[in-house]
Image 1 (cartoon, helix red, strand yellow):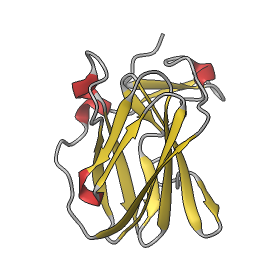
Image 2 (image 1 turned 180 degrees about the vertical axis):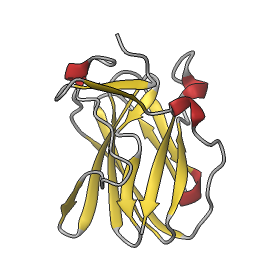
Image 3 (image 1 turned 90 degrees about the vertical axis):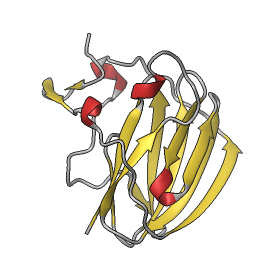
Length: 161
């Protein structure tokens, strides 16, 4: 069984640390265009800590998600006590749509530097669209109490040039 700070990649069985405990607690404050939308949607439950769960993080420089009609769509799963993918990596100036779900209990997804604060109820999908104006790292945190590990639920949004 893996800890939340280690991920086992099914293809190749490679274990490595993603250092969630070392996430910076500060946030970056930069100009950004932000829009929020909340809609019913399906979620896909996974067993967490299992290689079959598809818990494969983004490489430091690999872009997350896919380009769809000029918008980078990134599907984000919140679970006790983390986010997938982590980090989320996007390009500066690129329009981004985060499509977020919870796989277990209600969580939040807050990115203060971008003015994003989503509530993620199980069985529903929430989205946020933004265009980050500055290459930087933004701290992601859970904004809804979700259990004993709530205070340790962090992630990173990396905007690269």
